[in-house]
Length: 88
Ligand SMILES: [Zn+2]
Image (tube, rainbow, N blue to C red; front, side, top):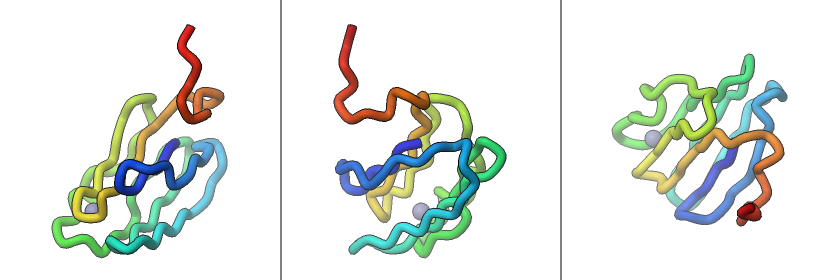
C-alpha cells in the first residue's frame, strides 16, 4: 500500500501488518487503519469525507483519494513497492 501526498511518495506500508498510520501534512490530517489485509481511511479532517466514505480497499490498483488533502492511497503488489519499478 502506497501513500502519496501532492504527488510525492509519503510512505509504503504492508497490508499484512495491522497498524494505524497517522498522516499529518500542511493540507490536513488523515488516519489510515490497516486491518485484516485491507486499508481504510478511519478519520480525516477534510470537508467532504469522501475518503472516509470510500470504505476499505484491498485489491491491487484500488485507490482511496482525499482530494482536499492531495492524498492518495493505492494498493500495490507486495514486492512491487519499489519506486520507479523496473519494466521488463
Ligand atoms: Zn478526505
